[in-house]
Length: 440
Image (cartoon, rainbow, N blue to C red; front, side, top):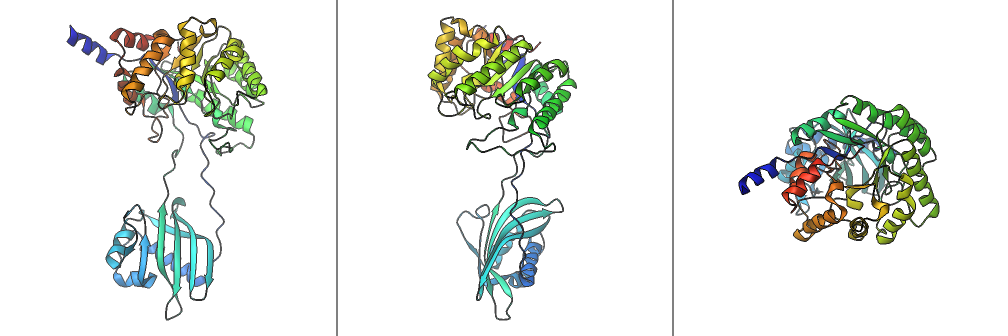
């Protein structure tokens, strides 16, 4: 019988991934702008071109000496973490590890005095002009008056996290692989006009000049993706709740784009619970969503200053505005991955455990929370708090952007981590079968 239970547990799958994202062309992050290219003397330009030509090609020691001084040194931590490299053999190893393709060294700063100079800039891979690394070269004039490189330091650029839109096709393939029937798809429109962790504006692609138009276009793109798989995917539009266009966009998505839910992210919105105007605005947004019949999925933790007091304020002032509409609190009331706000979670757990009337319409998703790095104590805490919240309102979620390796892993990787938590078989079966009204 014990073996049968193990087989049954192994075969359990959640009905849906209740927290997964797609990324359209209007919310894609902008690449960092390159500094202005400066004009350098013709002989320096010739040297830069010769340096670029050495990469990814067969070279001889004499070719290296046409570019470098005999005592030159090179530094690239990705090639040799021990430090500087010296000599022709090391030079060839260093240059052979440059990215393949035809490179162009773009100078952004050049200075010289007497027989020495330096030039700093960006290495682009042509013809696409992709930024692959940055460089700093120290130059020295040799006997014939020409420049050579006497010190070469190159820093490879970390590849961009997002290279293009994340579409529904790969999401559905991930659901198939995980054995999951449906997914609640969250639009990334809330990124537009938001803030980053340093409270600086997040730079996004702007094919449309006006933020409101870009938010609308991103929501429409996500709705069109979901519409391609009507039996598998459910659309949640999103807005920055502090945006002046938020209420109109909520109404439009509900009435004309078949949205079933509204995604809000207080962290991206630079929301502050100690700003009464922000709280009033969030209450207004909750009321608008309820009026349009939209469930609400909310990333509640706005930043590090967040705990019991903020949860109580949310329960008192904001949650009631949703009336009977389902409110799905993401990441077990934190940020994820991991338990980022145990105090906030404990406050929700106490309220739910005592059947606080303010919690009757609340659901909680695991949204990328569970990772292999959780300690045994943290794993036990997730289970204990889930029991206090009520297993009947706990939802599986991956918080993934399908196909983006740097983001949360896909559902087929995350579900085994969740199923390995010390839930009972009956509890895990309850979690798998939970189906809030906004998914069907």
